[in-house]
Image (cartoon, helix red, strand yellow):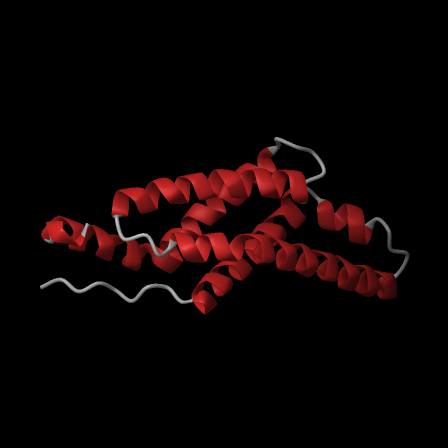
Length: 148
């Protein structure tokens, strides 16, 4: 008999979103020279670098908090879907919605590579955090037709 892995908890979803956005913002800080433009170019000495770095970190954490606040409930409810095909279609739709929320909410230039980087990291970390759960649903659905 195949048993279903435990459904992800609210805390797991929160941890996933927090990790994802911290990784995204770290990559974007150095990929697009945001850190250099915002912190280093506006600093006269090492004290200014520390102060500007602190304010940059506060800005990143604030954006992370707001994005988590907007997206945590939909993702948590999405993980309650029992059918694998519907779950994967819902993840795809959620990724598109997240892309547009991210692009219009935090990006200075709309329809740029930042949203694609965000979506790619989202899919990779989604598989890392919830892959075992999703694949356990597939096994249950294939072995037990009444489960659907």
